Length: 346
Image (cartoon, rainbow, N blue to C red; front, side, top):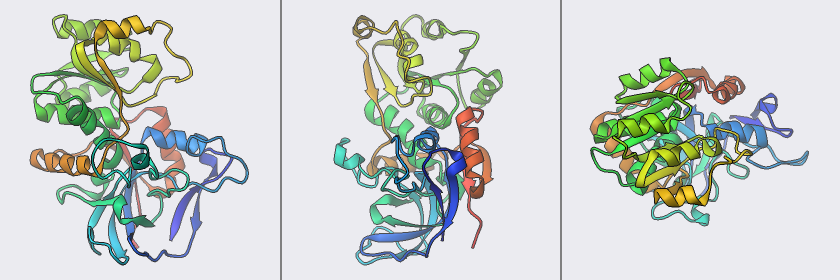
């Protein structure tokens, strides 16, 4: 088997392919012949910091990527959820089956130190790290689901519990926001999309966006959000910017609304000077951090996607051997939707 390995000092220049013996599954384990993986902003952070850690010369290599699709090739003793020949997706949190988040459920996220990810052509996983997937999706489409799609699903339908007719603001046109747009459109929500690109905004309109805001020309974008909602404010904000955009989200949300904080695309080291407890208290809004979701949520999401035949939006596809280039392109923010890497058939 071959695996991508990120070595210290961190960076795409130290992301290389290494050869290893083919794995044999033990009790409770499965081997999966990977067909595709997709990238998340998290992968750019891991590549830059080795899994958010400073690291040193003795740090073991990290096998990156949480999100992938493959075919089960073999199973170990006691495995009951999947069988050889099943097509599966990875699960971001192998230990989170259901219920509320907890430290023990969040442990062992794929693609982090100590939990090798999907960036290998023949992967050994615990049975809990994979799940069968809808037949109508391609391998590349399946690979986009574990992190971005599930984060958007949980934020809107599990945490915020939105209702048809509600207004949602989706920041940007990356993976989570585009999935959020597709889910919101299917659920009957009014959607407001922000972007710095008019071209991307027009692509969002084609996916069902009802209002478009270019935040380059409208840096105080809470104003058009208020205008579009007759002064009331949005019911829900998909907050992907972090410190640099949270104040605008607080000004955009209605009293008692919901802000799902799912990203830190802006400079996390520069907190907004104008953010104060007074602003937060005045909104009476719920501001909640979101980190992906459980297997139970993933299965519910797949049922809804199948019902509505929702197809993930893939911006570009590259061979997995071009992972460093793909990560750099991900970091640039030039994509609309998802970037996918494919494995050559063996």
